[in-house]
Image 1 (cartoon, one colour):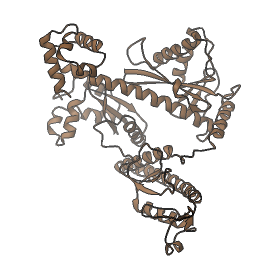
Image 2 (cartoon, rainbow, N blue to C red; image 1 turned 90 degrees about the vertical axis):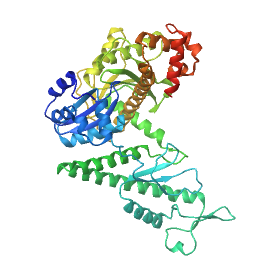
Image 3 (cartoon, helix red, strand yellow; image 1 turned 90 degrees about the horizontal axis):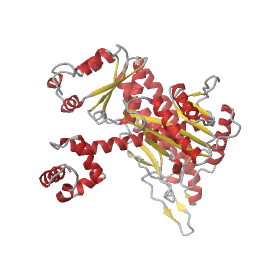
Image 4 (cartoon, rainbow, N blue to C red; image 1 turned 30 degrees about the vertical axis):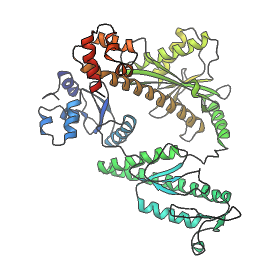
Length: 492
């Protein structure tokens, strides 16, 4: 890092407000490398660019961070507790390399249940895998969790990790020996089906316990923030977020949830009533824009059919009509591209179009239909801050109860669009980072770099090429091709 900040960064610092907020430090490729919170954005961010600070910092990790900062963004909030929560959400979203590892399921105990087992046991683990198991937690207090499991074993007659059941000749199972039958609840000889009923009841109990502990943790976090114990509040916030994530991803056993279609139908009809639609919106499409300060601007469109993701119909868009940071223009472009194509192909429009954003983004989407002289289908915006439903006409914005099944369906649709857009954005950034290795090869200007990549199609294919094959690319002779081949080999 230079001894002092470049002029443009110093000017940005001077323009910052003396108010709470969150700041995002970025490297030269626009990647977010650190997220922090501040009581005063002006004072905190300016401290990063004080003359000679890099030489006075003892920790190598912080010195490395300071040397990489090329730009920053800030988000103002109303209070320090709000900054605390926003910081955690952004760390979870972007996972910057220089943040302390954000609390996830690896730090705290979880309870895992594997439905593939004939007699599923309740096991402790610190790692949640993307498998078909059901997970509960994470739990910050291991002692309380172990006591709860012991209580569950007595109450429901379930198996924990240390159990060694024996299968009897008739196919039933002896769960415990005769002595422990008096200690643990229920008969100690059961069929596999009867045991699964016990496990179901224990899961319902444990899920309820998880939600009780979540409410207690939230209250404790709020209290810590209120007395300005922000380190403690941040630790509790991490546990809360991790517990919320696990509860959100908790699955039923492999045999599935037979009530899901009925619940989807209930959500569709509730949404029809809330929005005043002529029929349940069986086909819905949602659009989201993703970028980092105007770089790598992309958009996503996801489609739900009968309340469930229809992934074969997902689409992603690179912005073509302009370069820069303008969510409204980006939304107008992608909505226009989507429905112009459907109109050209004489395909039906969805029953409902959802725009991730407020009145501005919704207006941009509506403008796309007008520009194409197309009659828009029912169209709404979903503003993130208070989950407000915004209409394109004179209707008053709608705030549905958070437990409303229609709102929860909209949230699932919006969150899926956000996930899909961020995945595409990350793919583009990764591709740019991989290709940026050519920036370090001396004497290779932007035009030759572009020509090389166009000739081979990707950096991976260029890496695999021989010196003779590289020499066939425009603008490179045998000598430079051999030098480039040696350079790429050293970058693996």
